[in-house]
Image (cartoon, rainbow, N blue to C red; front, top):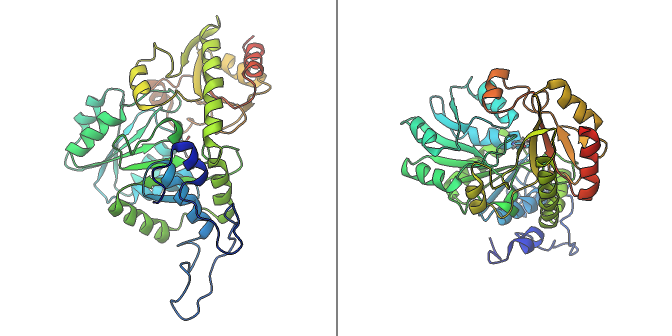
Length: 384
Ligand SMILES: *Cc1c(COP(=O)(O)O)cnc(C)c1O
């Protein structure tokens, strides 16, 4: 795309954007239309039918590509619809290697839908990349990565995995929802596909559900555009507009998210009733150095456990929170708290989720952009 040389903050606002031709609207209008007039059969102005193309969605897709340093962006009706499109690149018998502490919805899509169609998934701890290498065979087609992982905030070395993927001629896809391109650019680190639940930080205001894919590979993008149109899991013009508007403030929101999260992480770490805090910014985090290398800051997602690993105690804490809202999701301007074992990760069997650390006392915070002092006071009174 044009203006590739722009810096990140400029890209969030201008990347891939053109001034609207009709009236010079600075913000792309919401083209709430399903179809477009043709002067003669097949003669049109670039748009025929909105499943295939829509100008508002196109503006968003160009923005997505620009901020992730890729050439091709695709927007979908949800993050899971975006992952669904990636999985349709494959055929029965193909194998995919994934992280074991994966977003619960991705795990459900993999095991409950696509296993039925003959794809085979391996789940492993990717903090040690040799675990991944050990699972590769002739049927392996893709490595699916989250970093930081949800909700344990493990860090996976994307560059190291991209070397393994390239050596074995398989694809590397990264779910970049937690980090966003403000903190981490998987394509620059060697990934082939970046995926987002734009529902989270990209849109950023808890008002839209939307998914995204970005790639720099023409062949993959052609296949993905084909799937997007053929399967039809697109997002509407209004949602595209909201996500695009969100992206324009991504950099300022992320900076404040990270600043607040740092204060909260250190507060929790010093609290006598807290057992363990999971946040990649701590020097004691097992992959802190990798996080430092592949991210520009440590993100605003924090998980922690209360002492004694007591289910009731964790429930009491999340119920007592007043500014943090108890809710699924993350990445909005408002702070949210969640209890993964009973909420986001309830679809993963208990023995399996405990293997990756999702114990009953685990609480996950999505730190918002309120005043950090108020957030800390809220946690103080809730923990007691
Ligand atoms: C929310 C989320 C998804 C799924 O996205 P939806 O927009 O809810 O479909 C995938 N991966 C991660 C890491 C998420 O947080």
